[in-house]
Length: 147
Image 1: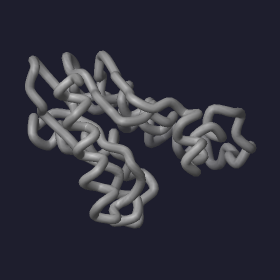
Image 2: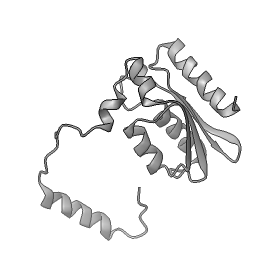
Image 3: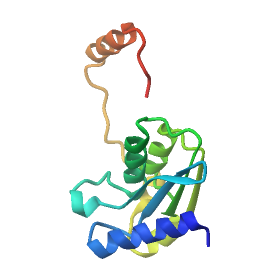
């Protein structure tokens, strides 16, 4: 077995044995070395965004002192949900390896499949002009970083 996927699996077991959340562990690798790791901490932190991939991204960014994980690969025990896939893209991670797919997560009671379907329309535009003013203020700042 790939040593990085084994570490992701071990991380998942650590999380479930501690009661932190579901069986989702993750590691991030750069140049053959683990630079970040994490597991699902949704229950522990009372935060629905604390998926294994997000926790590993946060850990890697903190360790490396950057928000850009270009050149990294991610190993995770399950196919990333749309939220995690978005975080992976924002972090510029170049390759993702996963163990179980969304059908597997569905079988053990997770509702990931629902997030791949068209969501109920819960959003509405509000005070666009005032928000555009904030965007203009930001755009006027010199030497800003986007992300």
